[in-house]
Image (cartoon, rainbow, N blue to C red; front, side):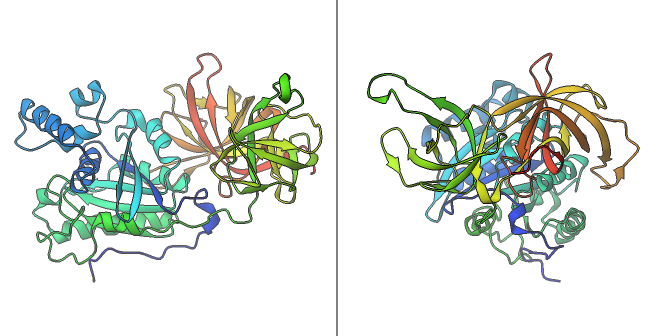
Amino acid sequence: MSTDTLTTPLPEQSATSVGTNLDLGLLRVATAGSVDDGKSTLIGRLLLDSKAIFEDQLEAVEATSKAKGHDHTDLALLTDGLRSEREQGITIDVAYRYFATPRRKFILADTPGHAQYTRNMVTGASTADLGLVLVDARHGLTEQSRRHTVLLSLLQVPHITLVVNKMDLVDFDEAVYTQIRDDFLAFAEQLQVPAVATFPISALAGDNVVETSDSMPWYTGTSLLEHLETAENADLFEDKGDRFPVQYVIRPQQGEHRDYRGYAGRVEAGTFTVGQEIVVLPSGVRTTIAGIDTLDATHDQAVSGQSVTLRLADEVDVSRGDLIADAEHAPEVTREVTATICWMSTGALHSRQKLLLKHTTRTVKAVVDGLGARLDVNTLERDGEASELGLNEVGTVSLRLSQPLAVDAYATHRATGSFILIDPATGNTVGAGMISSTHGVEYTI
């Protein structure tokens, strides 16, 4: 069997189910895996070998490494910026690093591997285009690396890549890499991940990271960086509807702008054009777009990712939290949703629990109607008898809402198909949800 970088065909998945519209020149990458698998070191190696750090930064890291008694440069220090991270040798918060090669620009999110900070990993991976799952060659797949892979799959990150790190500590043994690769591919197949690329590397020594390594002559694939440079981005939400959550109503009511009324926000999906027929949700009122403004100009259209102000042809009641959508592909308006939840609190999630649900720019009260099933991240079995979700557990939950929301399935739109759950007593975020289905539709548009 060839041990080149593998692209394994797995059960077919719609291209519309894996992300948002992406800038073809930019790739957002998130690391995942267990503690000490080398995520921070890998990012440090990519930054160093692609010459994306300054000399004074490298000198500071070398000095700190020497002071800590290391006989090598601790590249993890390039991303572990918090004092507590450096003291404990773990990543706690998400660290973002930016770099570019002649072929592409990158945003790298170094996410925590410790189970206690799984919620931070979800934050870093929620906008990723590619997830790197690192596995220590000495330990193989762990519960946390499986959990992170499940979360990447649930977040529908377009590309998932296995990186078997620390091959230098197993004497670059091909059999070790092959076993881990096969175990991971079998697990990914159960998750219906469309394709997985795999790489054996040593982040500390730089083997197969930016340049291919002579230490593993049995591996004939590309370097990891070349894979990142060539990973394809697609128009993942073509013809699936335009979405614009209203963040702020602009009414100066003075001077030459006395009669101005605009609705500020960010285009989360699609393209809005002047003259387009739209619907305001949840009210269901239809009108057309009269103008599209930014701070210093007017425009004929606004595309996904742009922050603009929309002016409407008619005086309609629009407030923060409303959603402006194209009239032909409007989302459902409902007070009941079923969603996959990643629970992030030490206190368990249980039926009848009262929470706040924040969806785009609107926050409503929610009650847990029932727990459908709890997912075992190791076996992928679903426990239909579970009565609660504990810290870092994943399950399907039904929620009833105090007010109607305009929602999509997460498989169609990330922004309008996701939400966070908030403890009303503390204001802490306690869960992240991805809508799988809606029911109890309140309005017919």
